[in-house]
Image 1 (cartoon, rainbow, N blue to C red):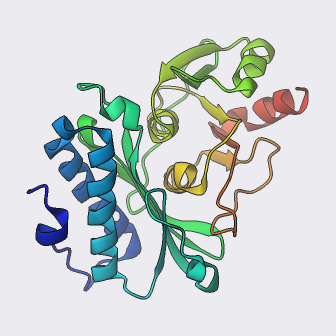
Image 2: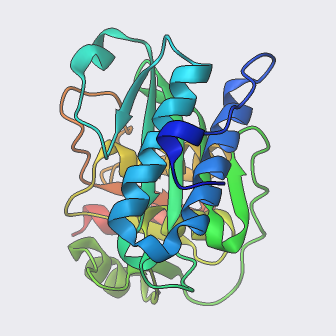
Length: 253
């Protein structure tokens, strides 16, 4: 694939392709582009991946609105029911440190403020996890609860959970990588506080929920998308059998 996405973006056939399949195809295409241009750095990756996704969405779902981390917010989305929420490159820092795999592409579709389809690509790992074929949650493992945590900026809630749950920490990069680590059974809980936006969590939440995981705000309330202010600062994704334990621990903070 060339790096000139404006002039040479691939086509994805819209006919007969449902939203789940489209989300997966879009995340895959953006991931392939990012792998091809990785030596150009994170800023260029953000830009070109965003251009590609916007082009393909305009081609395949022209009536839908888009909220992207890398584009100026167009509030016409607030008048639409179907809104795509995308993060063209989640984990710019990790992307810029090859051969790290803990970065992602997020593509999700919301309706009525709820994710109804989504995909998270982990391009360096050769994976696209999506709602069309929901991942099968691995069986629980014994031992301490494993918490996914930022390798550079651990949020305040993690220190509390570490103490309350006698847990162990598993450092890794992007939000999508941490969320998909719960889906893949590499960790048990991903809790975040201190600032995120809708594009950080929408696609991961769609995939995690489809896999049967608990998804919510840290207080247990629902996550709502396509809000006037896309700031959505906290998030909990965890194995279903740990939901009550984790929410109780968070309430005691």
